[in-house]
Length: 603
Image 1 (cartoon, helix red, strand yellow):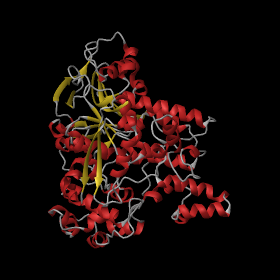
Image 2 (cartoon, rainbow, N blue to C red):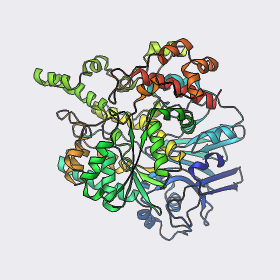
Image 3 (tube, rainbow, N blue to C red):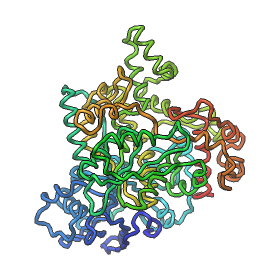
Image 4 (cartoon, helix red, strand yellow):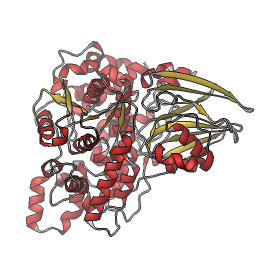
């Protein structure tokens, strides 16, 4: 199992087996050495009671937490032994103290129990399965397949979800019998009885309503953001930063450079001018004095990179219809050539309501009270609004389905050859929505509970760790999220200015993190020229050609070949750009990814 995920930790490896009265427990760890280089290897066992921890990721506030467990027998100088002693002191309550990204296990000899736990936003993955040989868990799926007596098998219940959302939300994966531990949750197994209990210890439910001034919120946001960056710079190796032309990564780079002027910045461009942000990146770097000592390292993505798609699908392990897999992999490869750890602006669009769909939802709520002139102006800026309003369901979960749906029910029924059933987000992936929440806040809550961990962050983790690179995300500091939970929706989405992430933009500008013209730069979706690339099939390798020509789809016998052929043959770049929410290229890409995944893991 360890060897199969050696890319996550090429620096060291250790396995230990613990004999208990009721069973044997094995813990394995592969290490990417970033913190406490000399003594930080895991698993770590306390000599007092034999409790043991093995955990992937980092607890950033371990320095502050160490004082709470002073006097304990420390053998290391890093973060995970602090977490272990906090568990010994507080039980599962220790999780409320941790600030970081982590997925790990604690073996408690006193109670003969095993605790699995995962960070609040699910930045680090954790999978588990049961087989005749026992209970197994891992950071990746392939090690679980290796120890299971049954071959990898498609869970057909996942298909309607994947072809609706572009991923499989919730505890279920596309593999039968393999589950995810949800974000902000823990699983405790009684090793004597085998009984399993799972609980959420944290949930992000934004229902802003506190009567606080905008200036106070700006100031607190900026203070928390700066501290989130500061503690994520804790490392015993060099730290760099990823940079696109967007506001969020620019803010992270700016704040990192305040501490580390000789910063390495990594960015990706495209040959297609409409998608390329290299000029924006160059203007931003030259406009900020503290970035002038930074080293810019870049790479251009081209259509021939689609030839590497089978390898990306293999590394992600789950079918994800996400074109940004390609640039994510490229920028990770670029950064990993010289560093082990970088910071990123990932996650801000989800918790800060940065996507266009949040603007549409706010417009749908507010337009009834507008004058004819205001409504006319709104429709001019948001021409898709009438269609959005026309299909807008009163049920917030169904609204979320409608905003992101890849295929309609009729096409999906034809593609799968069966009734699709309920395509709603599974209950365990739904937040606990209050009826008095603003509709925009409801959408943010669902975005953060399902799409963020199981789609956005999953692809970031799997593809960065493919190259043994750790990516840290300051915007996903839970303190920032909790501040935003009490921030009114109108301070997240400024309908008058036609812009999302309003409070963040104002804070970054007011606190000298970003110049105002950068802070209020319109959002350009980070995507790839997928329609252009999919039309040029001359450079496709055999695995991709087998899919687009229908050979693989007929051989697999999962999707209807005729329906699939119609979808794959309808790709056009006409009228498609970075702001296009769903195109025929996206639908074709979903078939391509699924077929490559099926061929790799199941066929």
